Image (spheres, rainbow, N blue to C red):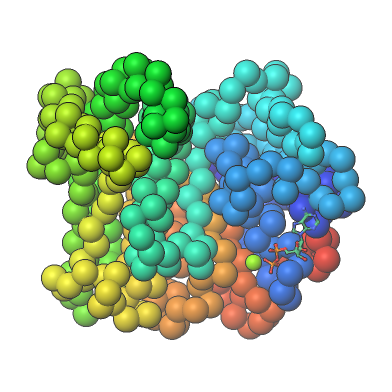
Amino acid sequence: MFIERIAIEGFRNFGMLEAKFDRGINVISGGNAQGKTNLLEAIFYLSSAKSFRTRGDKDLVGFDCSFARIEADVSAKYRETNIEVRLYKDRRRQIFLNGVRQTSSLELPERLGAVLFCPEDLDIIKDGAAARRRFMDLAICQLRPKYDAALSEYNRLYDHKTRILRDWREKPSLLETLDDFSLRMAKISAELIYYRSSWCERLQKEASEMHSEISGEGEKLRLGYKTVSTVGDPRGLKPSELFPLILRHQEEHRQVELDSGLCLTGAHKDDIEIEINGNPAKSFASQGQIRTAALSLKLAEREINRVDRGETPVLLLDDVLSELDERRQDFVLNRIRGGQVFITCCEDKSATSRMGDKLFYMKSGQISF
Ligand SMILES: Nc1ncnc2c1ncn2[C@@H]1O[C@H](COP(=O)(O)OP(=O)(O)O)[C@@H](O)[C@H]1O
Ligand SMILES: [Mg+2]
């Protein structure tokens, strides 16, 4: 998949910006706070209708603007799409594919696949389970619109059930619907766990290969998907087989949930265990190992994405390449050939020309080449 051209207006610090990209490696260099990450954020938004930096669309609209527009020509194997997103401060965004207004964003990832790697992704290794769930959810949402829909429904049910558990003492009538919410959450948990389990299995295979190649020292990365304890090993189980196991956990924890006022059972507590050479990466990995592991996860995500789609998603590398030593940089640059890539880095002409096919320079929201 290739972004041939992009036009942006009123997004973050951009006035009007238009650029034509190379189908190989595009390098965007420039000083701090000039708009490099903003450009990647705009591209990523076209692929998912989500920002990787904020939840609120209104943050994306320029401080002095009332609306923002991102528009791009995207070529894929079998079709070309003009994607346009309009964002407002005070109303819902609008999405257009070839000029036709869409009722949802679910079609976007089919038209443009994107995998992003940015410095915050080191949190996937270091932080709590929420960072790993977010990684997993964003990746699977891109591949499976059904998963995206199930996840939204799950989050809605979760918020509702949390409110019941918090307020039932003041308003006992709330308890009438508790079991219904629990049951529906168990049903959707079964679907989410089904997708997550098979995705994690593939991720483990790709990422461990990638990691030992990048580290060049035969380091072993191992990933293990962790879910509701009564499920045990979810690999190979269908949603209908997972459901009764999840339900059992829920029933066993009903009283504890009421006592604590917290929602304690379901797919929202899932995690991916990450080990390097047999030790939990979170507690024992060095800075370099964390960087290599995070990069391996992202390149593995891209590989899964490529196999599923039958074409390579766009890769966005924000400020991560310059942190690697030259050997690792070369490995990555070699490995990512064959698809379109956007790399941002600080100003250093000699290093950037080695990396890319087309060089851009970003200053105060203006792009030049
Ligand atoms: N909604 C917004 N409106 C206008 N400017 C914004 C908005 N959001 C962020 N910015 C500006 O964008 C700049 C940061 O851009 P960014 O792409 O993160 O920089 P970098 O080039 O370092 O990656 C900052 O100057 C910030 O003030
Ligand atoms: Mg940046």
